[in-house]
Image (tube, rainbow, N blue to C red; front, side, top):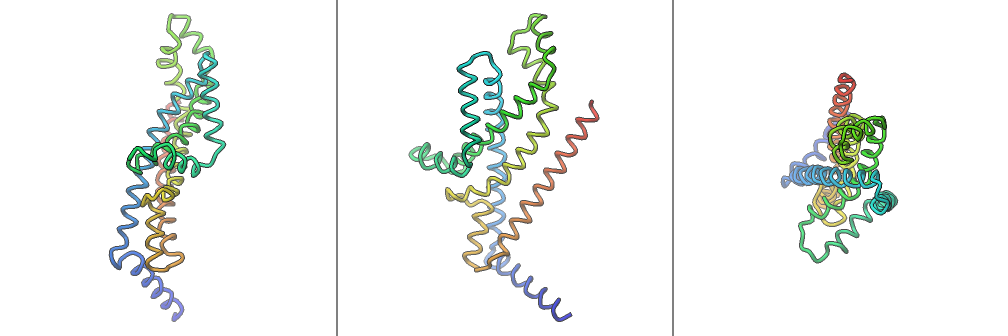
Length: 230
């Protein structure tokens, strides 16, 4: 009983010093907002880039196809943290852009390569006869993709896109490398003031886990809905 009371007392002290005292919980709240903003922005940018690159890889234009392929290979072959640092300190170093914008672009470029492959695979999963049928009735290649192929490919693409958003949410934890006060950076600031070696990181681990759990549930419902529509 005494051991349990001691553990409860220590836990209460940890919560007080890491969250309540000096309103330190605000570091986690503000960091959560930055992480969510980065995830949403990067997902939108990655989706746009991914669609363009996927269509470029599938086109009959060899130059566009090769450029798109090299973009995917280079982006997927280098760590996202290296890409973030290069884009921030080299590409946009003198532009004065907000760090959130730069980080969103960096994460979006990285995500675009993976999204491109998801979209390409989803489109190629559609029966080739669909394209032939569309072209036979007078549709151009672009019209065939827009009206016939892509709507059918969406069912194949959406689950993978959901998983990519979940990955993005966790990857934003490295945004602190360029000074952004995201969840990870907020935890480090609190740790630097309280000298607690585990509580700040435990807090953000719970936050990341909970949001990932919610996204996974939403993705599961989406997949079940798609199966029902079949």
